[in-house]
Length: 277
Image (cartoon, rainbow, N blue to C red; front, side, top):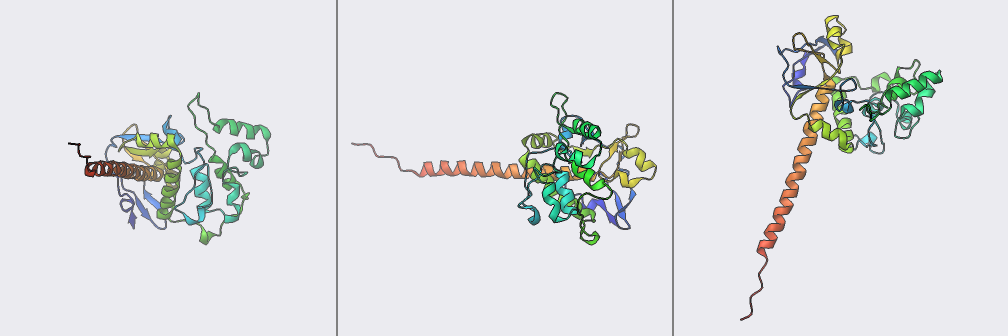
C-alpha cells in the first residue's frame, strides 16, 4: 500500500490511499474542513481557468525531457498525451501549427458534421470579452477518444501508467508552459500558499457513488461539510509548479542583488585621485 503523503512534499493537502495497481480506495479528505483554497482549471472562474491543462498557451518547449527538446507545444495536455501515449512519429501532428494542435485546424478532421465542428470551435475559442481563455488542448483529447484512434499509439508496455511518473511528467510540462506564459505565471503566483483545487463539480457525487476513477485529477470542496472530494492530482501538480517558479524567481532576485553588491564593492576599492598641492 502506498499513501499519497509520499507524493506531497510542499503542502499539507489531504492524504489518499493508492492500492492494487493505481486503484483508489479513499478519495475524501481526512481534514474536517478545508481552509483557504482556490478553484482552478477549465471549470473555474476567470482568471484561474487560465491554469487549465487544456488552455491555449504561447508556444513552449520542454527542455527537461530529452525526447521533447526539439518540439514546441501550445497546450499542456497535448504535450502530456504525446509523451505518455502517442507514438513519436505522430508528435508533429500535435505540435504548434500541426493539424491537431488547435481546434480550428483539426475539429473538422474528427467530426463529420461541419456545423458540429464549428460549434465546438466556437465553444472553446478564446473570448476576452467573456473572460474565457482558449482551450485548444481539447483537440488532443478528442483525437485520443476517437475509436479507432486517428493517430498511432504506443504499445501498452511503452505507455506511462504509474501515477508518480505521470505527475512528474506533468510538473515538467506545466512548469515549461508557465515560464513561457506571463499571464498564467502571474495568476499562479497570485494564489500565494493556498490549496489549489482542480475544480470538478461532479467529484463529490462520483466519490459517493463509487466512481473513483472520475475523481482522480480533479476534486471539489463540498458546500455541506467543507471536505475535499476527489484526489486532486492536477491541483497538486500546479502547487509544485508554483513552488518551482517561486524558487526560480527568488534565485534570480538573489543573483541581481549579488551583482549590484559586487559593483558597489568594486567602486569602493577604486583609488581616489590625489588633489594637486
